[in-house]
Image (cartoon, rainbow, N blue to C red; front, top):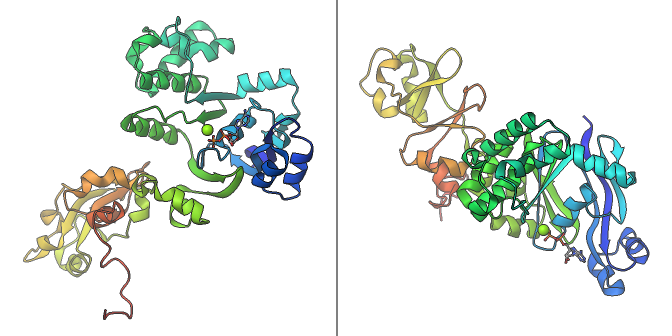
Length: 382
Ligand SMILES: Nc1ncnc2c1ncn2[C@@H]1O[C@H](COP(=O)(O)OP(=O)(O)O)[C@@H](O)[C@H]1O
Ligand SMILES: [Mg+2]
């Protein structure tokens, strides 16, 4: 599939004569530090190439000063790249003239910054609808879409208020709503969530993620790409110490999906007999009962099997926690408190995919030491 956004050897250097010697040095393989020493120029983006497919949430991470904001601003030419190409839908954006750039920005992109200036004398709704007005969308239609965007950020009741009526975090969400309202092909967000309180931030991120296919993370360091991968890959297989150190500060439970901690599970139909299932249930500790659609309808624990006869249905409980495979492990914490295995179901069709033990949740959250998790091998004595 063709990439939506392609960056080809993108370079952005700040200074007096960026395109001359500094760019040449970079292309010859000099490090940004070297370029800075010799020429006094800052190579904020030092040769970045990547493909972002349609529908992907692509997150750029890295320490402060690593070039994230500069890179993002080059995509819609808010900053003029020094060298290399930005290609969107097969068109070379870096070759556009000023008028084409304006049209590209208006029709295909929208951008949300951390510090987002709202129009103080326009209502919240008008602020959100502004991008649509610029696109010549009729008033009724744009108010409708602005309302929808406000709903998405949890501010449906605030449309006729003014920015000064809102807290800083709420204003930030209005900025986000403005970005979403135009339903852009490309939504560029530079720390758009950082001013939000953690709970709201997670809601917003989940909302956004649910609109999209999947997400990848890119780790930048000194203007260069160190690693690109899924959040799980970045956490479990960091490319180097910088990535490992960086991710050490990130709460793994907030990054890793439930599927990461999921194990295979024994399943039976509800009318299966205790006799035929008992051995399996005892050895596994439990089993789930599933209906014809493979959706979980009951849990049978090993305790319940003792002395029982007849069908599994009779000894099953309907009280068991359920989580979707895409939920982050951190979101399962409250489910682990029940001490029962958590049924993991497909987000879409609610089919049972596996289960997560409460113990596993606690382990990932760092609440318990790893004692019996590693497979038993030869080193029994210690
Ligand atoms: N307008 C500018 N003029 C000069 N240097 C800049 C400018 N903008 C950013 N820089 C420098 O470029 C580097 C990358 O900055 P930035 O893209 O803001 O990083 P990040 O967003 O990852 O914190 C930093 O060294 C920063 O000081
Ligand atoms: Mg930045």
